[in-house]
Image (cartoon, rainbow, N blue to C red; front, side, top):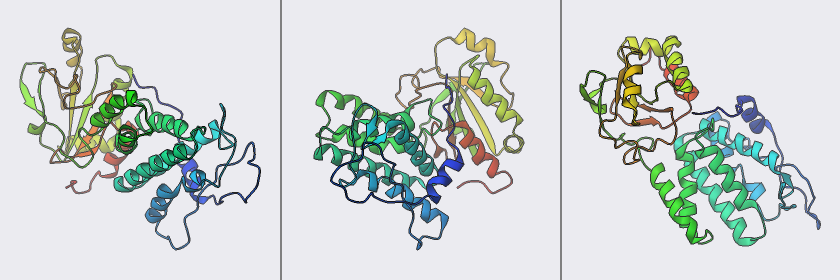
Length: 328
């Protein structure tokens, strides 16, 4: 079950946007402890989206610059306490969520290249190892409130192909890159068949609606129950369901069918609830369901809008479109 980590607030992201600073002045001795060199968007960027894009793509420039030096040990990275660096990575992740997907992917690609460059320049530095650990924790860990496989894919692709990564580790990275490439944002979701409690067979693509919320759940899962209650109690989402603009496809992918059958009658009647009778989803052939619950949001053509996204972000998007035209 997912356990939500400490929330990264919008205020933290705004603090990054509002803060200013730069590289420390030249010094012959690197300070033992120093502050993360934050970035400020130049004044020519007046549009909020452009400012966010600039921050996303240049967030790490000053920190990764060779002139920014400091102690690298068990508790510091370039003189910055690891706890502080993790806070900055959380802010970076929050900024990526506020940009468009293309910008976020470029920023992740750039982050890997800079971390790799630091490792090439100084193999005794712990920059590469620490940043890689944070990228996995924030972008890919199923418990992360800012997880996003679109952010992790460029980074893990870099790991899979880098000559500084031990050959013994590359197969694992290659597999993760392959899994992250399934059902990418903007691509058509993989179709599959499922059976409901009565034995009727349906397919994902046979469900017609402006939006489809694909919900991988388990009977009795507390987090699944929370999501169910949230869907039922949210006025905007419930309005979309009542109007037929939203369909919930609630799928069980595990093997305890007797347990599922006992529980399935309690699911909302307007949902399309069933189980993966072909057992192809649980084997990671067409979906990478790394934890339960897992939510995907699809458009009317079953293209992926959000993939294994935190529920709050999916619900916020659905609530925002209440009363608007369907997504094309």
